[in-house]
Image (tube, helix red, strand yellow):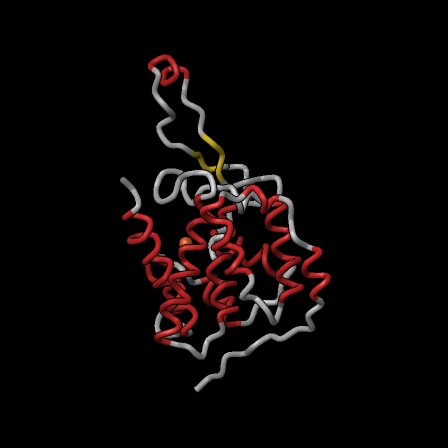
Length: 221
Ligand SMILES: [Fe+2]
């Protein structure tokens, strides 16, 4: 039986607290407390996590970007809401199925699995869509609320997530597997991981699907 490798680092609480970001104050009230209490669960790598989140919150569109151009949570703060939903779902099911896994790992992979959707610093993946002249004339909104930014080097969302995270933060092998393969067998490229998934990967895949297909669908009127 393989053991989960835990990365424990020295914690300088003053440094971590000093890295609180201004941008986070813009998060709407219905998400802010949930988001903060999830981040507070990262304890062993607290300083590195604060550094990573300071970069993500201040330099990328992670906090405010939608979760998609026209599907689930295609609205401002949609990606953040989705990430919070996934993390909360994952903590619930891991408590029952795999309490030996750390809350910290669950929070990291759940909050950051779709970070790639934020694009790159100064170059977001999604732009708000403007209605065409014809749509404006007819008084109609744009056909999709957001559009994809084609001016980004092609990377799949999970690969961009990993690229951004690893510049600031040490991930365990299990965390890398969970983020890279979080779409599971919905994606052809993921065939190589079939039957080799770690518990963290399976929990993230299920929580992501549950949030996207059930929690977030039920809220749509
Ligand atoms: Fe997701």
